[in-house]
Length: 474
Image (cartoon, rainbow, N blue to C red; front, side, top):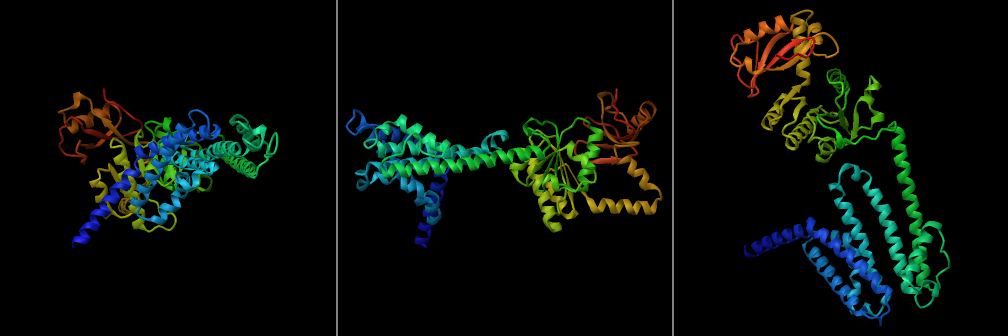
């Protein structure tokens, strides 16, 4: 029992240490030390061993290497898997080898400290997700390209200087080796002269090889950008500028109808559609719908996808039941509930309406304070039943449910003068003055009364009317 308790305490201590070592402050601090270490390594390589201040720079470099060794030791101790630790940090382990006395006699091995630049690239890439979307987009590719250029030039400059200083007068300073590293990167061959030592030649080959990788990645990035521009019709949309827009999660024939209805009622409103499908592969009865919305190819259950769509500034979020990729009804409803609850959490002020397949899951949305939900198959079944009971009713309902023709449903905010007056008083007023029919009232608690026999309006009540256009009281 005592050994088990000690084991649990040790596991908890390792877990806390793992969290500390991977927190943002520590990562950014390590990144700053890497920049200082790389800079001092260049200073040390460019100085003669007997020069004034050389020993000070050397001692500071040893101290920094010792700090990195301690940091790696703590990470290795706290890591749940030693194999994963070695796979992730083997380059950093190589960079602390100059700390060992057996390696200090080989001055060129101090170049291993420059390998920490790969760690710096990893830290930067990790924190790219916190940048604005316009900077995040393609940030990984740009980081790799710029990082490879930096590593090739800096590593090549220091390495050639370390090997060629005493053997080649044309490459005996950091300035000369810097430009020497630039030329192979762009020209594909050593310019203006070949290195004389084996180490310098290998460094030159490394820079030329990195140059080929650089141009391949640069060409691929530019090509992908141009293809996206061409396929997107030249449209580049900054989603961060959208405000009071509507977000539709998922795509189906219903989404086309929603877009058409919403545009008919709000001509200038922006609409963002989040779907895993590519825009070019979406089945659309009316292809012109694509020009009215902004498509975001992503999973709408992810927080990052909703954030990119501007959920915090949106006014409405509609979540369609997604049964693509052969999902079951239960999986589709689970995705709908997850997306609806996430949207409400990110923006409590947003109006969220979700589509469910099974009504028994509606209680989850009610507990999460999701504004509304509809049961698609139920609604159509109710309409068919009413059509069978009351012939011709479908035409009436169809007109009321569309914004494109005839009369529609509208919500009407009551002015202060109507507080305390009866439902019947407003009914007569609306029919005489606005040619509108009052049919229901919504209370502040979310409940609704359809055609109440008696109701006295209170502050916060909203009237539901049938009219041929949007109206206002007063």
